[in-house]
Image 1 (cartoon, helix red, strand yellow):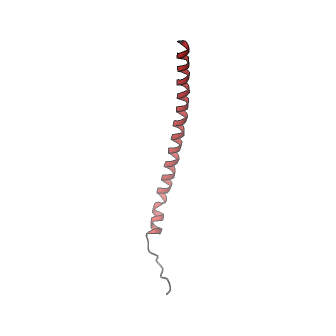
Image 2 (tube, one colour):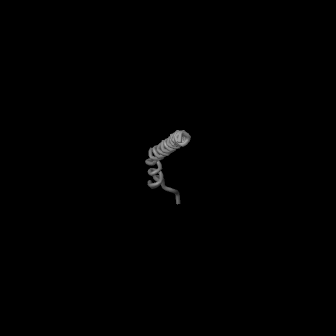
Image 3 (cartoon, helix red, strand yellow):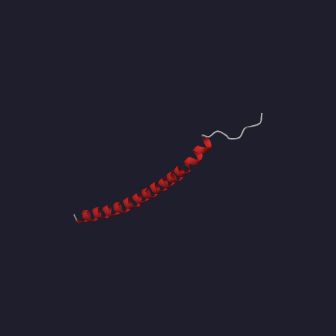
Length: 61
């Protein structure tokens, strides 16, 4: 019976360590994704101005 509790405790410890590592990796991934989103969002007005404005100079015929 003691072996069952020992094995269970070790499995629980191993699971907790792996869970912490996976959650840390997910947090880093979300932080990177948010950083890219903010970077793209800050550049959006610049691209909108380029894409949706008419050229100001006239082309020769």
